[in-house]
Image (cartoon, rainbow, N blue to C red; front, side):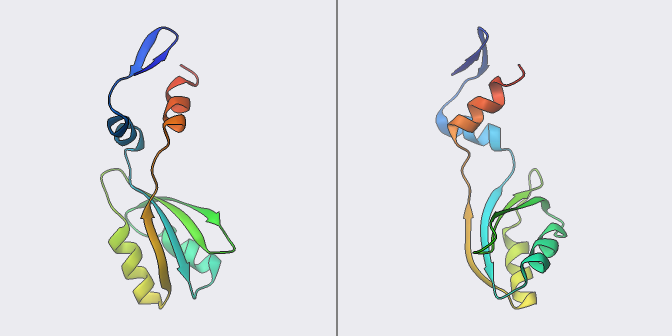
Length: 108
């Protein structure tokens, strides 16, 4: 349970709170054998992608947030195959409870 200024702002198990807060699939993806800017631009153009950000430019690792209710895993994989890029990592990023607390209690 999360309480802000005496009011319950969230109630549920850890997993329930994470899934409610996340709402959209967030992936951590590392892609090699391609130009960093070209990869970034191509990821942004995928129809299922809402947001792309850099996690680590040196290792060409990106954070990809999918549009609500959609998954970008297949589109990212197919893009890499089409461009001849090497996909070395694709994993789900889990929302931290601290982030959920901060989101629910800031400006409320």
